[in-house]
Length: 254
Ligand code: ADP
Image (cartoon, rainbow, N blue to C red):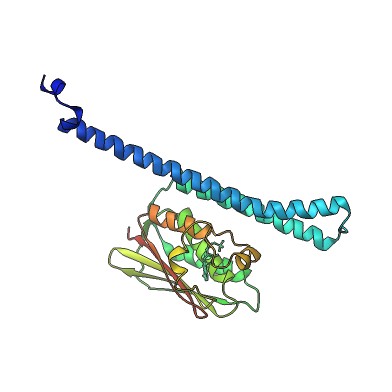
């Protein structure tokens, strides 16, 4: 047998096999690397509110601060933040591990958009932004998972409201060939050009102190992008500081 006398590296089939093993090993390393990074990031994010809570509790225990309702409210706020983080992290780890089940079927967007816009309009304070819906009359059904699509829109609308003091938030939907585009536009604080490439990265926040004050976790857009991609779409953003932002994604026409 020729192969027995040949060095392994000179056997073409063997080389091919070796290449696929290398590929497999390197993609496993990637998964492992991502898992390690995720755990590292998660630990870091969870530690911050816990440190604040422990600090207050220790000061209370030693008597260096007096209990007050304001203090308890601060503790409640940090605990809520922890809860939100844990909830978001659970979703993030599901999408990143590929455990999320997506079942696409033809859905009609207009009722979904209408009910979401109404729900959010009810939540906005009187002096907050107004919210508008604008869609073309011939909007075809899309091939999508209705729950996941709702989740995408909830994330985008939540951000638009959070980062817009006053002005208008517009939800638009229109058809372009085999795609239905959905855009959420706001007249809020906007995002700096140098920050734009990072907005879909997990745990990324433009201004950590401001976002943690507004309750942001920096996870929403990472999940949003994965949910759009799992349904065969893509998402993009355009923004100008002081003018506002537009987040746009498409879903395939059914
Ligand atoms: P967060 O929970 O902090 O809002 P996201 O992943 O949803 O996390 O968003 C990441 C960051 O992108 C936010 O912290 C904010 O800095 C920026 N951002 C997202 N949406 C908007 C928007 N509509 N206007 C301005 N900045 C935004």
